[in-house]
Amino acid sequence: GNPFRTTQTTCQNWKRPRNRFIQDYLDQDGFLIHLYIAPKSALPHFVSKLTVCRNLDYLGFGDFSLEDDAFAQIHRIRFLRILSVFSPLSDRQISDISRLPNLLALILRNTSGAPSSMTDESLKSIAEISTLTYLELVDLPVSNEGLRHLTRQKLPNFRLIFLSGVQNVTREGVYYLLKEFPQNREYGCTIQGDSQIKYWMSQYDAAKDGSAEPDTTRP
Image 1 (cartoon, rainbow, N blue to C red):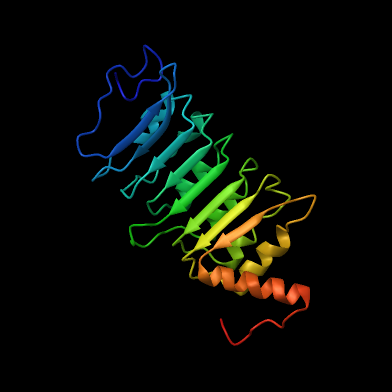
Image 2 (image 1 turned 180 degrees about the vertical axis):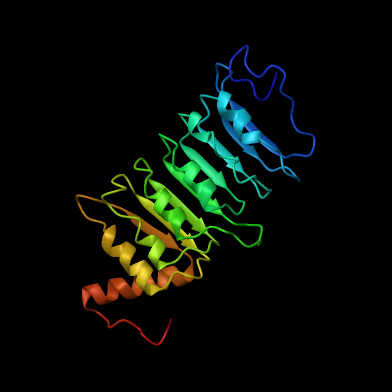
């Protein structure tokens, strides 16, 4: 059967790109619900073609080049709940992604090692995704100022944030998140990360409990 089939009559002429790695899953009715793609080269306007996949639940992109307007129409995939992108993105692309009406999890990793043009403005856009419960930021140039755009008021459903390789984030940014998203009976948000993030978290907990003074000798 056609791997991009979303109904019996939609996308019948689609074919898999030849220079690709694709994982896709259909539900019992033949609707495409899960798609991960990692081609060896760019696929122009590929995302816009996916807007016919109205039942798509998970969409993942490996490390390959995406046009700046690649996500201009992604909000039309209304039931998309999980988006994973392993390519460096721009503020424009993140802004377009933030228009997804039912997004629960956003996983952003720059695995290419190429410079990312993403700035703290992207976190301002992400803060507008009120449905978001999970955010992962790996090897991205966000800073403490960007993290301050993330608030409980704007993200009432936030439950987990994972940070790794965020070189511009310091102890101050991690302490802000721990204060803004506490774990208590009324609200529970977990913050996780690499060894540096975990160290700052342990220092924060120790200082809060009064069992130790913050270690100011370690950045």
